[in-house]
Length: 412
Length: 214
Image (cartoon, rainbow over all chains, first blue to last red; front, side):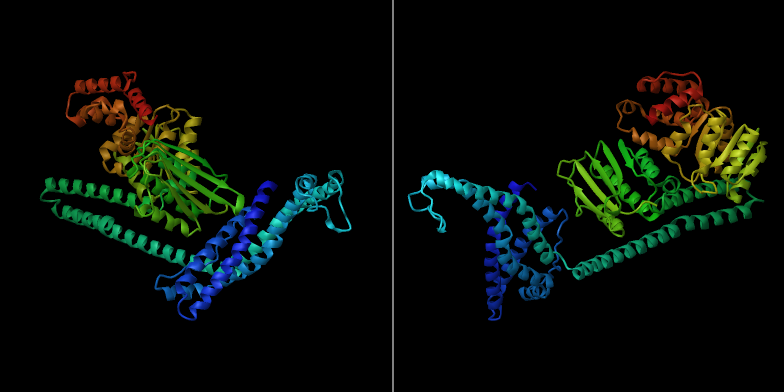
């Protein structure tokens, strides 16, 4: 951040620390009133305000420190005012917010306020001769008490070096002071290690449950498909052949018909099995990895599809499979729902942050895709969440649509 | 005719050998893995080889690679690739040397034995044969193209049968029309797609496939 920007921020944050004090008062009063049974809505309103206020500070500190400061709050349950209030009051993050308001309403004056004051004083002393000349006599004659008495404008130039010194001091101290402020914000407003772990455990429990559910329903689907499909066809095939065996002697003509029927039956069974296998693990993925499988996907779909893949190595098999099905699903959406004329698929692996596979499927179709729109995008989300992967959609009505997916992973 | 068979599942390998013997082919070697296939192709230079895409030891597309590599060493070595599934990508790679004498079929097609043997003979003779599934998906890719939309129903039918690698005579039999009618349709197809009409069956097939794969 430029120092000029910092100067603006230090003023904003200085005013904010005054606001912090006001919020602290509002909240404490409202919480006190709860005991008398009237402060409920005001407390909740104050909480919303405090959280918004704290969020703005998190944003600022996140930008300044170069890494985002996460929100620590527990989810607020649905219910009446009282249940919500109880949840809010039980959330340790609420009390840390409160502690931060106390700290900020004091410390803000020293960090943000200090920085701004040093700058303002520097400018003031730099312009001291001007101030001296423009103000009535006596007002700025004794800048440091009766020991220093300035008589003329020329004499008042003696203050200018002090202005310069203060401005240098401001220039040197602005960054460390802002950093100090950001550190205060982060230490109180970021989730504690315990809260972070608790949130992570909750998230893992959800994604595990979803993964198990998805797998169970996949297995059920496969069982049903096999039962009604290939198994049934093989059974009927056996019947046709048995019948043919019986009739061989007396009616060769009918046997020829039965055999043709039997052959037809094997073809259909093979088609069904092939579709089933593609749904479980596409053979081309086993042959060629994600790169080849996505190329094959692009080649075999009816809409012209550009593919660019930069993955320097092979991904773990489970990630490859999840990534393949995610891309396939996004592609199918673009073809089926978006009425796209052109599609592009980009896959890229970057090393930063321990390794990340990013996938983007873009189309020039009609847009308006959303998670609520259909099972497809939710399915992608579920599939990728097992690997801590994420999906986001940028799809204004009228298009174009970008489906962005990413999965953290390491190359094998 | 001398054949090399590469198939790792004994059941299917024996089935193929039985079919070939019944039709008077000489199976010079039947192998069940990629490295043996490479050696067999180099040693026998068979009139045609029938190869499963997926072979040990890697159980990936080893058969396909062995075939493509062998054709790089022995240009135009006739190969017919069989697979449980067909991929546009593999068809493209297989045809990329433009030398003809290649086939790419679903394993299911073997059950129509007469047709299968005919295909093997035609590949040995230098024809290019694509599975109807490959052709259907190629056509689907081009369904919105203007030149293809200009084709009549019959012309489209001729186009897809040509892309599968069938001769004019076979197309005529299949569509219950005369050979003369077929060549009229195929002339129309070539004119509408802006392709150079070729006399020879195989060149026609290659031209059509090149158009569809573009």
